[in-house]
Image 1 (cartoon, chains in turn cyan, blue):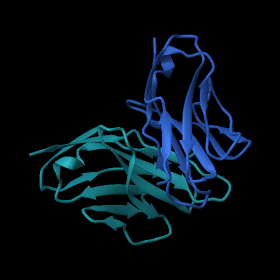
Image 2: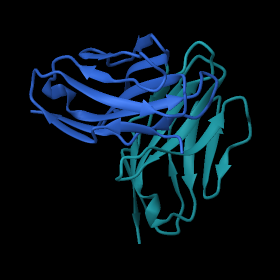
Image 3: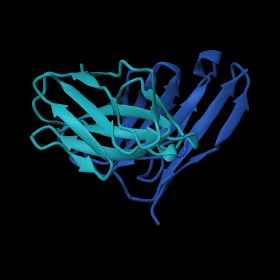
Image 4: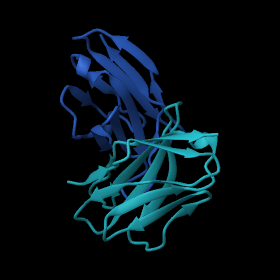
Amino acid sequence: AQTVTQSQPEMSVQEAETVTLSCTYDTSESDYYLFWYKQPPSRQMILVIRQEAYKQQNATENRFSVNFQKAAKSFSLKISDSQLGDAAMYFCAYRTRSYNTDKLIFGTGTRLQVFP
Amino acid sequence: DAEITQSPRHKITETGRQVTLACHQTWNHNNMFWYRQDLGHGLRLIHYSYGVQDTNKGEVSDGYSVSRSNTEDLPLTLESAASSQTSVYFCASSRDRMNTEAFFGQGTRLTVV
């Protein structure tokens, strides 16, 4: 079974600085998707960025980028130029790329605080 | 705009009562999911469905049931509510098994007293 591990329960960063959130996963599959979701106090789950395992290039969405290391099964999220609105819970998630199954498996989350 | 809605947003119920949480999506998505969110556990899958009349158990399905009688709805029933089921519940949907993005409802905070 696939598992996702986020080893940092809490992180903090100062406004305008850069922070990296860690995620590792375990799988025997070769093709899959990885995601980072943001959950602000409103509870809404917001997709931040996605990575397809067959793509070697790291995904980037504006200030958000990932460092995808497939052999190491590592998928970290880098937030550049941090803003107060980035404060939230961040969840790493794994999804099988298969016709026969479709499940998102989540890590336990990292709470990010942003200080002015 | 298409959306996914959960109701109620908040509910308090007594131990032993049957409770049903509603989830309705207007995207015509085939796949629907129920998760519970607890501190220290992230989101854990309760049940999921790949289409009408299809339901499957997730990792924490004991004490919960779902039914899928149409594409739009996947209600989650707690047969006999227990204090351990106090949690925030999220419904999600996706178009099909090869589509990457899942969309989440706003969540239902359930308290069992």
